[in-house]
Length: 180
Image (cartoon, rainbow, N blue to C red; front, top):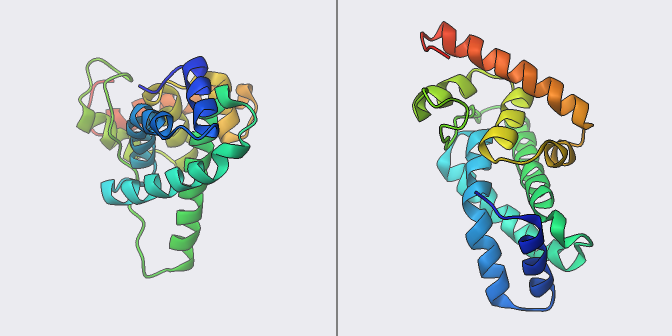
């Protein structure tokens, strides 16, 4: 699931030096986690693919200016988050378009007992902020500090959102008859 900061940093530097193979490797390592995050945020696999494509285009454009190569993961998810926000703005400006709520390409990291479909059902019932923090922390395995960076909030806020999100997820799953 994603890479480590040092290896990512080396790949970024190699990309900045013009090595195409290094960029292919970054995409190989990060495309699945990126897509999983986007799928969790927007629900639709097709829309997640489109937004992932937009994010990679933004990465290609911004990579030469990335000053902290070892911070690639939070930078990537910040770009993806911006793509989601831009998409939501467009959806809300076009009232005839209905927005699909989030599901997720979820692994069992939230609970060894719950199936992917059960976790998706629970995520569907959460508000945007809580859904996002669960996806970043539990499903993308980003550390608290990286989540805070992506979300643009202090680590304490991430902790409180996580606490609230877990409680809400348990409640939503209990309402739907799942043992959480």
